[in-house]
Length: 134
Image (cartoon, rainbow, N blue to C red; front, side, top):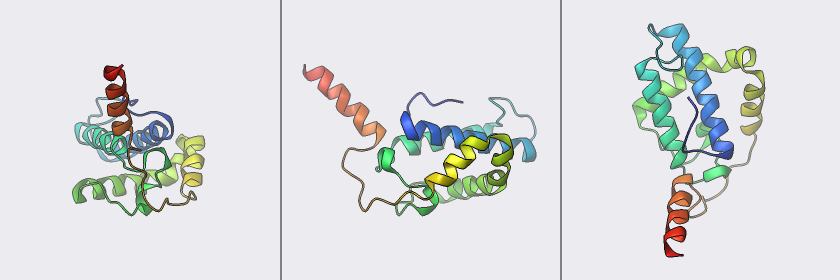
């Protein structure tokens, strides 16, 4: 499941989340259908994509565990935490490069305040406005 909305770092982060969900879903759920994900895990992957798209930090975002803005609903946050806690150590075996990049990203400093209009969604809207005004 690759993202059609996200680009750059956020697209890579979404890809990592999907891979973690695939590992978790394979071990805990029956009947993987869509890209190795059951319906519930596929919905969580879509929810994660939406939240990454709307993240006010944009490409400068910290990892979600250290972010001062908690944009996930409590239920989805707990489901994502469980999946990542289970799949995180296994990522070194299944997707070693992504796992190392994910660990490296945890060391990134947290920006003080998100710059206005930094989210992918805001940049797309601005690009549409710019193209219609020309």
